[in-house]
Image (cartoon, rainbow, N blue to C red):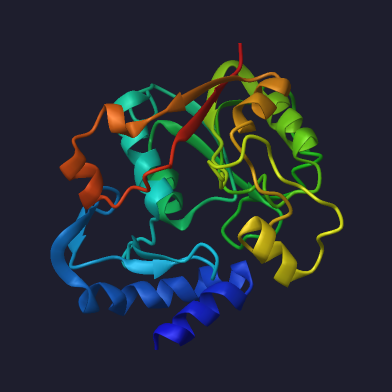
Length: 257
């Protein structure tokens, strides 16, 4: 069963995985009933989380069986609740690129948000477009989320500039990507084109680069101010261990003057 789970997770197209997940979440919480790990998003506890990731980055005990949050989603939720105006501002225009299922339903119901989702092909997106050329006006959104997208696009610089363009002055966003913290510079090689080689070099078959510690500078080159949020400074160790945060995971908060 575990081998089948890993195979489906890493081979099925993303739109199909999204549809299948709604069935999976019905029975998985019953199997994992317990109180050793906590998900702050769904506010449920389990004996452990599910495993997740490619052969290169496979991780045990990280995927919530109910709302399908990963470490990065739970970290983002804590930031939004404790260190932002996302839940308290009177009104926010929000664009969520490649919307995560764990957030989609919650944000849609949130009264203070004018919440729009965008993606090239996701079945839960409101708008479908190519991130290289976003068909929206300048200075449209107060908040933009774009997580684990930029490692997939052909020209990440162009996509960053497009995101900067549609963000309002004074607006902010969260732009997460996989980062190899042992690399000073982002690794990208146009000759690496096969799924097998991409997984070997970039951690997943559908990635076309692997970001290094220069990622914040790339965002700054597109015009953003960047704040790196380190949860270790705010949360007691017992809490982030319960949430199963990844030791190297940071949040990249972008702002537009």
